[in-house]
Length: 348
Ligand code: F6P
Image (cartoon, rainbow, N blue to C red; front, top):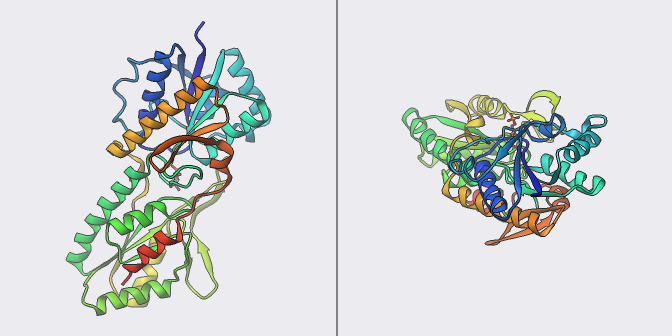
């Protein structure tokens, strides 16, 4: 009987998930495995929600955004008896190995299930935030940067027409990868990231310098997780709600609105805020992300064939390698100081 391999997508969706599913399915079916999709991430393993996958059913999904498997932010380790139920369900459904495609939350669960319950787990790094360690890039990130850059390009033209400053809020949770890349690519006048401190006073000074130098409009790119330093020593992380999800994540958002008001009040420059939000996660993946996701999917399948459990496919330089899941989820990958210095060179 063919060994059964499950594949699931957990956490926030991101462009390229379907490309991983397609590649891993094709490679493993050709190698004689049976593939099953788990719907809604870890929740699907608690509730036995499966769908069969084969080469034909995954043939046309390469360019499709989102995930055909659906996703959830369910944390089975948070529910009493959740992990044991999951282990039982895997056994009863004859699932020999699982490929988990996700960010630090989803892969953190895969790591625990491997370490504490000896389950055959393989990981694939997904997140637009690019904050996973052990890999140079996650898929989905390039698409998000491309979208955010296009948005900044558009904001540039309308800001210029109206002599305005526009503050654009960019996703990334507690890291500023998308913001720094899109900010550089879009020519933002000031960039604010969670990793490096820039006070509101410094932002306003830069904008005044820019106007003094003859520019009639400005773009400020701010990470949703950037802290606002409105007064000396006063840090404010702007959250939409104090509630946290099953993984302890707060819902970020709103920093651009606050910052825009503060800039207008302090400088007198007419200022607007734009929150890019989930647009950054939607739609078709870039060619770069399709290729990276495909390489990850093939590598994950090879890791299953080789029994490399507790490992994650990763990009290091131009090589796809495997790294321990524990490394990937151990520490958040922050924007490097040299990239920040490069970005700062262009501040007004
Ligand atoms: O982790 C991906 C991400 O898009 C973050 O950048 C953002 O803070 C969060 O997910 C939004 O989560 P949700 O889709 O639950 O609103």
